[in-house]
Image: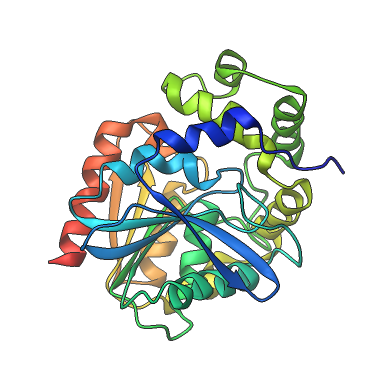
Length: 279
């Protein structure tokens, strides 16, 4: 296993982020979050499997007039500690620790991909929440077929970051992304722990999203890319049947990485969902 690294150039990126670094403890682990401040309803944001908090800065910036975004470096990513195990229950424990550690009152939760699965599990813990937004949650699981991106693909991209990569090389895997987002991925991906990635990928196929999803209380919104291989038409139909109280919103011309693939419409639709939840 290769060691995690946080590049000096990555740390320098933090100087351009209009957020404050805060730290909380979840058991023995120290978790880092980016707190964008303000008097709005707290919105805890949980990114995907290889997305440190800073990679969602462009999303958080567009929401500060509506909410107080608090973006989490999920354990094993960014500046948070690695260690322990990496099940959905572990990640949900960390989410509750962030809520309690920062003294957040009835926050909203928003998660993308892995983060959306974490939101579903955290939401059924009984913690007082104002609502939840799940963005393109992996619906793979036991008996449901494999997650569409292989572990080898994730580890190949991690290896590129560990030996040194740039925005142009990142574009080979993510050609639709804006250059700034490719630059941040190039500098921050090496901060992700290989064990965390492997364990989470295994969880995509061994932990069933539909164990938690039917019990996620209203109000909840599920957004998904119109072209996503992760939330297929069949998966969306099953999710609607399993949780009929949820709202469903389809993001046009977007795959799984909805905010990166088509940022304008994706951000407009998530803003509308949050405005409804905070009204």
